Length: 246
Ligand code: NAD
Image (tube, rainbow, N blue to C red):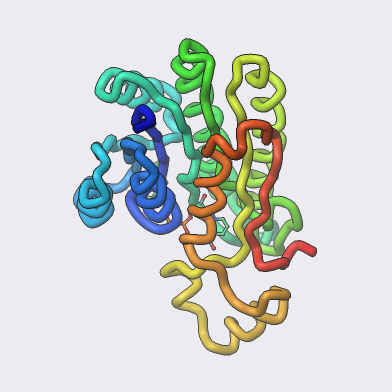
């Protein structure tokens, strides 16, 4: 049997991150769950990961904090002995039209969604370079490619992930580290479930496949991008959006 891999996944306590974690756990991968919420919020996810046969540990960290991110990455490398895979999934929104958007709304979304990715990449890549091997996947959004009224901060952060990913692919390609992004469209989560039937119908009209995506659809894309089958793929933005971007 192949050697077990180790994946560091941010924002893996719930939602899309938890689905990615569980999917990789079923692929012979141990999981470091990095999340800002209290560990109790991730209890269900951790139990499911262990049930799937993974060694899973929780690390509480705000990814936007450069020094805290380094501490956590170093602890994970020590606890697991290596880091093969980094999935930058943690993300937040603070939606407002620019007319009403405060400086703080801009700063906090960029800090978590974009600087958070930089922080993790900065601290994880030295470990990957030592092994001359690594896989990085960052979760962007179709909103970063299309723009969206009321989400200037979020769209800019998700577009920033695209530029960051392409740069990481170029800088670290010679070290056998790939960097790719996944751009989800509308995915069924607590947030989209809370929308009215009317709002949902309006949303379906924008999606050629006529339905929302599942968290598993994003996890499947990440599973592929970190697999050996994707060894020659780097710097891509894989849209998982039911055709919404077309
Ligand atoms: P979610 O809010 O359900 O989960 C996000 C997780 O990130 C939570 O566990 C939260 O505690 C954690 N987190 C938040 N801030 C953090 C920080 N500073 N440091 C560490 N962890 C932090 O969100 P989700 O819907 O599962 O989204 C996951 C990712 O997918 C995000 O990057 C989001 O922008 C992106 N995305 C989601 C959708 C969608 O439809 N849900 C669409 C496109 C992109």
